[in-house]
Length: 107
Image (cartoon, rainbow, N blue to C red; front, side, top):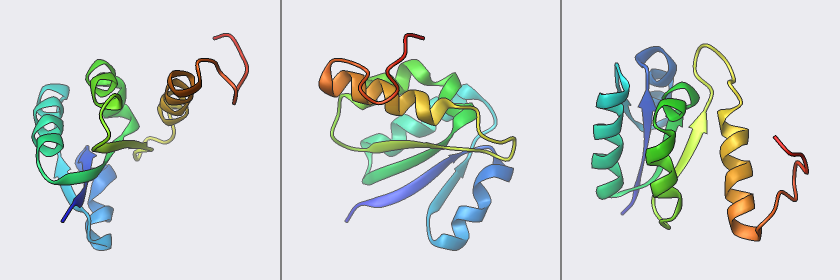
């Protein structure tokens, strides 16, 4: 059976434990990278990651985008929305259809 996890800074993720998700606090990008790889190789189908950490691990997240599992979903942290989630959705749409059909801009 697949499970769901949340990775990020402690303050941003511990509320998700009350929802039954497994939380994995990390203090830096190196620890985040190791944790992400470990979870992705395990039985986690969905991994939520704070946008701040996702920005630091963007290259590694691109590798996982090509795989069917796990789904890695950026979420805002306690510092607020950074726009990383929208950026990742835009990349996925462009990869799937070959052009930017949602935002239709050139940034």
